[in-house]
Amino acid sequence: MNSIEKIETKPLNVCLAQLKLEGFMKKFAINANGLHEINSTRYYKPGEYKVSDFFKAKSEDNESENPIVFAIETSDGLKGILSSALK
Image 1: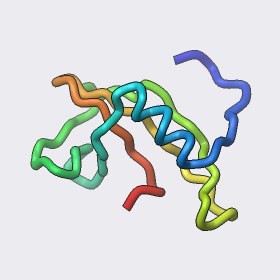
Image 2 (image 1 turned 90 degrees about the vertical axis):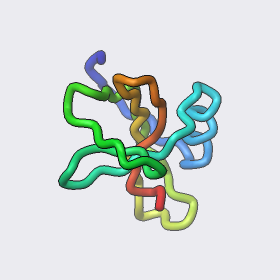
Image 3 (image 1 turned 30 degrees about the vertical axis):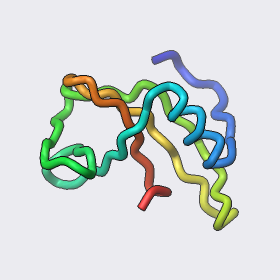
């Protein structure tokens, strides 16, 4: 990943739509066991996934919140997103 001089803030729906077009369809969560796709029991440890891209988003619901949206790719081919904005 290149060093980042400026992170552009985009509306959350724009970030999610762009990632969906790029094939990032799954939703990930993280806990003490590791990273997992929310519809699966499979957990990924560091080295089994990478952050391909990320965005600082503007929340449509709460302007004081600016969640970060991470584009994640796993070693077994899943592509999805991780963000505190997604429940």
